[in-house]
Image (tube, rainbow, N blue to C red):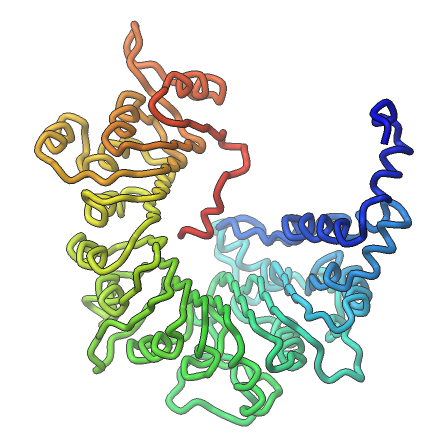
Amino acid sequence: MDINNAGNPRSKSALANALPSEIITHIFYIILVNAHRCLVSRMPGAPTDVTYPKLHPIDTLAHICSYWRQVALTSPLLWTHIDIALNHELSPTLVERAGLYANRAGQVPLNIHIADAGFERDQGPFRLVLADKMVPISVLNSSSPDYLRPLEFAFLDSHRATVPIRSLEIDIIVFGHFHQRQGDAIGYFLSRCQPGIFNQYIARITCVGSYDICSVLQPEDISYEGHTDRTHTINLPNQYFEALWLPVRTLRTNGLCPHWSSQAYHGLSELQIQGKTPRLIASQLMGILRASPGLRVLCLDAVVYRDSEEIEPIPLNDLERLSVATANWLAIEHEVLSTDDILDMLSPGLKPLRFSGYRGSMESYRKFACRTNIAHLYIEGNSSISLLHSINAGGYLQTLVFNALLLENDLARLIFGEDNFQEAELVCETSTATPQIETVYLISSLNLPFEGLLRFIKRYSIKRLVMCGGVLSYWGTKGVCVSDTKELIKAKLSTITTCEVQYYGFKDPMPIDLGDWK
């Protein structure tokens, strides 16, 4: 194309139409992977909501021109993500769109996302309770709208008993109890999955006003002996139910999951157990770990009850990411496992490990570090502030992420494990073991002393520093000065010449996803 015509809209259109369909399809797919689809708000004490973009990205792209529309309509992979909202003003539109997308996807496996911010009749009493007003639980807002009648979300063709569903993502908020429609939707889509295709299950259940909402998914022809948690029956026989779960490789749950003895926990590559899950005992957890020796991601933030089985290290040679957090204050009085107990249960291989630990002892961290290869470390607040020194004294870290959670006076403790720089200097003089760190992310640090930051960079031979949010303080001619705007902070950081420095303000997009670290 002639460079003189580069600004001509017709020339740009001609250039776009000249691209091969394979390249356009690939561009579309990249856009869709990074596009915002659905957001469920979970701010404590605030009204919950589900937010959808006005137009789905693929619909927008398909209306650019006739050629792009033709490419989109003949690319089944672009139509596989389907959002279902159970009680939202857009619910009828989304269900209608879901049927259209399913037809365009053909036999390409679907990714189903069920989102629900809770039914308003259930929300009303809890909103009043959160406002410190004593209102009987029976007070309901009977005039709230009902956007979908029962089973109107059942958009799949009635003559197809099963459909190729690759992934089921459940993102719902529960007020007091599961609404019948929430349970119906989960059962509807699970019962239409095909064994061998269904390989990812994600359940994010946020409970308001209840501590026993966790439920076990069970088939229609079996009842688990001695089981005390709530159950939710799926209309499938046990043999088919287990065959459906066996090929699953990614399982994240915090309140709605198969029984711990299910084959759903065999052969996993990613397992996240968090929040108010059904009762889990140590022998069940060890059985799950033994049944999934190829685990690459393990995140455990749940109460695990102690039983008679002795804890022993279980080899996990492929483990790449580990996050462990337990309620240690429960460990003494309620016979539950501590973080130390969980770490004793794990024996990772030599692969570089991304690790975050909460509420464990320094001695336990040291022992764990001796038999692992921790290359990436996440520290949050002051609770794990000495973790750095326990794990990698004299070693090497590729990445350190320190999330200060808007706490002050944290840097001295991060560097030296002390509360102030005077004591820290004494530690510095006597300490010979210092880890070297390639990249450091400092997130949300208030009153961060600039002089301490320079010591931090020097002491750990940091090559790249990324600061996200936060406020800098430093000594000036008139005493302590504060840099609290993006411009002032960037100007001050620009004086650092010993390493690469980047700064992102509070309102800027985060350069890393903290959800992949916690």
